[in-house]
Image (tube, rainbow, N blue to C red; front, side):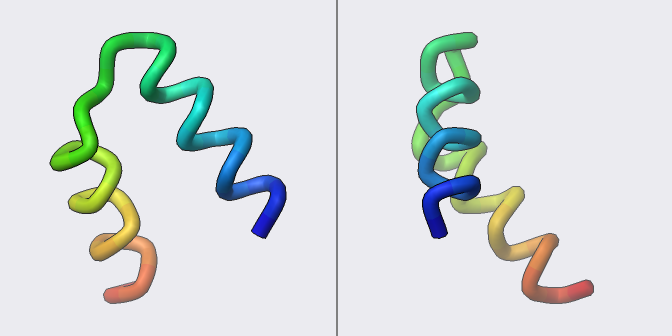
Length: 31
């Protein structure tokens, strides 16, 4: 969980929006 959290922080720092993060998480869960 910590890794995911830090990844989200890095992505948000690079300008990624919450929507983009949610899409990535959905793709990861979809496999």
